[in-house]
Image (cartoon, rainbow, N blue to C red; front, side, top):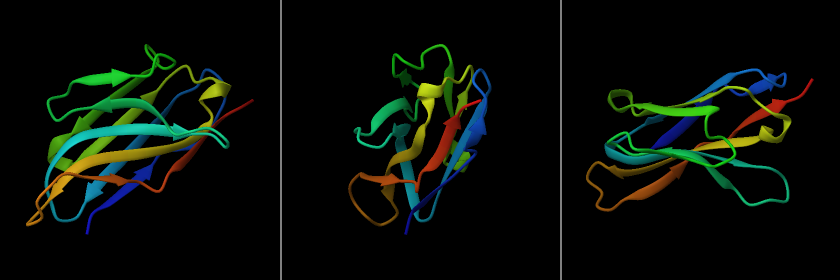
Length: 121
């Protein structure tokens, strides 16, 4: 069984920084795409940043230049460094990993439990 465990959320003042981490564990053969999404009540979940196994990245326009996604393939871990945070960044942030499990064919998407990020003074 595969689990994604997130950490690093919390309350921060506008202009501050946070770093989110997400570690995938279990019977994992390989991980392709890893990403961070966020969701606020009443709105659909949106992609914030994504990174492939070859370290190609993409970002939502609203976070370009402020957020940086990275990954440690040896640890199956993805990070999101968030700088210059704004109140509109307030949301529940979810980690996603597309991976292949050992002895199980096919690519499957897994999600973390979500971590709250609140930007307020």
